[in-house]
Length: 163
Image 1 (cartoon, one colour):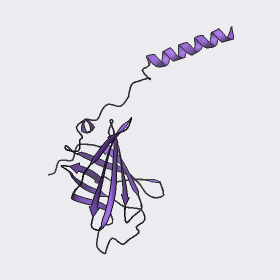
Image 2 (cartoon, one colour):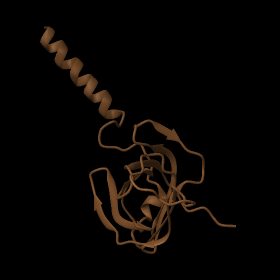
Image 3 (cartoon, helix red, strand yellow):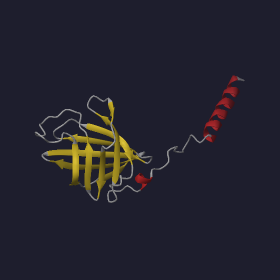
């Protein structure tokens, strides 16, 4: 009797869960900027969280970004990690690119798309991995020849309109 009751209860729970749409459906709506993203069209990531070496998130103010457009990278990202070499007196310690040419390698995982490229800033070489999901979440990982690794979390959005 207990066995029949357990089978009926299990079947009822499975039916209820399936009818609620839990299996096989994504609750996140596709992000329009992600749908249009390609190495030729480009992408814009608005950074809202900075992950330093210690792993604690630092929520950022508006204005930090990474943009890939027409085979070039533009960025304004802070750096709060460990520097192995001096970046020079009077120079920004952030990761800033202003139209550095890059060659993008694109791959796809089960739940996201990944762009990888290498960019140069003065004598420093930075390997950038940009992973973004269909819903618009993005992770930017920067591995530098002169500094500790940095990771930035943000959202894929349309670039802001310049005034």
